[in-house]
Length: 184
Image (cartoon, rainbow, N blue to C red):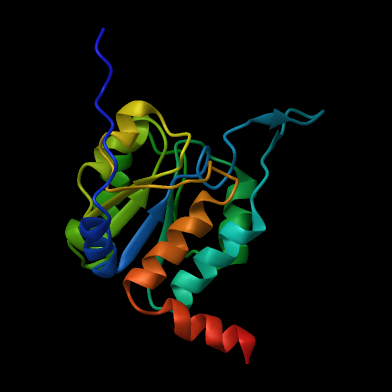
C-alpha cells in the first residue's frame, strides 16, 4: 500500500491564499481540541479547549474575518465555547461537511476561494479540497496533510489554531497593529 506524498507547503503560496481570506471555518475534535473524548459519570462528553486558540479566533473576528465551526459531533459544550468566542456560524452534527460549507458560503454570499478551513481527518476533506486556504494541525491524518496549503507545527488542541490565526493575521498585515493595541 502506498503512502501519500507529503510535501512541505509552499510558504509564499500559503501567504497569498491566507491574505485573501474573508471566512475561516474550524473543525472541533482534533483541531480546537486534542481529539480526546472523555466521558463524565453521566455519559456526558468532556472536551478541553486551548485558551490561546480561543483568543486567536477572537483576533480573527476583530480583524473582520468571519469565523465558523463545522463539526461532525453535536455537543452543548461546543455551542457554549462558540458562543463564548463570538462564533455566530456553528454547524454541529454534520454528516456531510461539504453541504454545511456550501450553506455557509450561500448564507454569507461568498465564494469558496475566499474561505479557509482547518481540519484533521477524512470527514474534513470535502471542505479542505474546495476552500481557497486549507490548513491542518501537525497531527492530522497523512491524507489531510497531503492536501493542505498550510500545516501547523503544533498539534490540535495544543496551539495549532492560534498558530494558524497568527499566520492569517500576518498574511493580511493585521498582526502588528493588533499586537500594538494589546501593548497600549
